[in-house]
Length: 221
Image 1 (cartoon, rainbow, N blue to C red):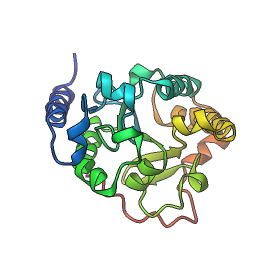
Image 2 (image 1 turned 60 degrees about the horizontal axis):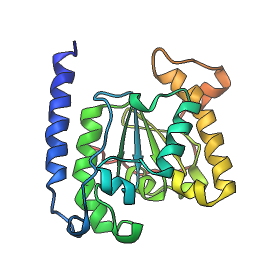
Image 3 (image 1 turned 135 degrees about the horizontal axis):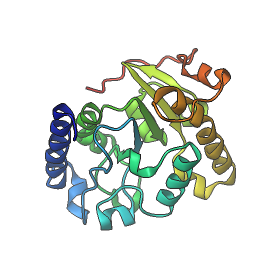
């Protein structure tokens, strides 16, 4: 049986997702089939934050269900994770038209939803996919190409930015770098989460704060 604290968090998350499903705070609701709040256990040791739903996500109301989602599932498995163990969401909860990049005001409209999801899910590790998710969770960073595969600590969270799987499907070089990032992630997960394989001390060194980056303040809550 779930602890009362966590069963309460799960109920609160369900209420939040119901609010997201009816949200009209920005223009994206006008063209959506379904809002896509997110899916996964609550609490969860690992949270994945992508950028925005695509066509298949909009149709089904679930995150990462197209080709990028299949790749994400494979990548998680390479890091020693089952997809069912991970909470998955996006920075914006509705599909932008023609899969364009989300606009700043759309990201701002959804920001309180993501903040509350992080609070309720209470992850130890957030995997950040793509430049828009990076800008939202590590404002002031140098960009995804510069920081992918590095590990950052902020306000009790370990944050691991990497490329978005959709970008990897379009670029063979990015695909190889993304695979390497997730292979390296396995050791970090082993250090953070009980019951997972803990690898060697060299990999655990990645848990130290990355140096030389002006990360600013993460305003998560």
